[in-house]
Length: 236
Image (cartoon, rainbow, N blue to C red):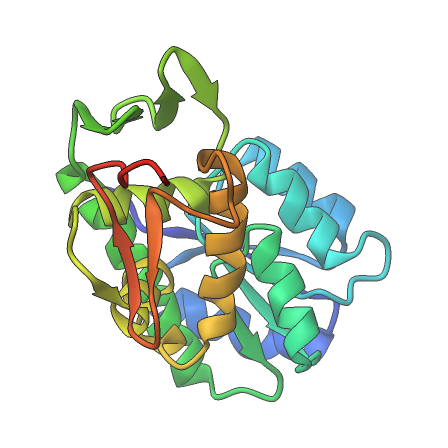
C-alpha cells in the first residue's frame, strides 16, 4: 500500500463522528464519513476504501445489509462498531462477512489497534501464495481465489476462501482453534470460537460431500481442525 490507507467510517451518531474523525485523520488516514447506509454504499462505489468501520444501527439501511452488499464485490476488512453486544448479533454480522466486532462503548486505542491489525494484513497480501495446490480432488487457485472440485467451481465467500487457504498452507497439521482465529480474524478474536464454528460449518456445506462426515476439514476434538490430504478409507 503506497498511499495513506483510506477508511470509510459509517455511523449516524454525531458524537462518534466527532470523536473518531479527527483521531483517525491525526493518525495519517484518509477518511470518508457516512451517516446512512445509502451514503456509505455510494462512497464505497465512488471512492473504494481500504477498510470500513461500520455501525449496525443506521437510520435507513441495516448495517448488516450494507455489509452484505459490500461483500458481493469486495473482500476489504469490515470492522463492526455497535452497541449490540449479544452473541447472536455478533455471529450474524460475522456470518455476513464482517471481519471484526467492537462493542460500544469502546476505547479509541482499542479500535485503532484493530484497524492497524487489519491494515497490516492488507500490506502482507503480496506475500500470499500464488499458483495452485491440490488436496485430493480439491484444487485451490490462489491467484484467482477459486476452488474447484474436479472441474466444478465451488463458490466461496472471502472468509471461507481465507480459512481454506490457511488450512491448505498447513496440510495434515492440527491447527488449534486459537491459531485459526488469530490467522483469520486477528489476535482480538482468539477467545471468540463461535466465529470459527460458524465459518467451518459454512465451508463444510460447500466443500464436503457429506458435511456430517467431513473428509477434508476434520475436527480434532477440543483442539482444532486439520485439512486431510488423503481421503479416508472406504467404510466396510
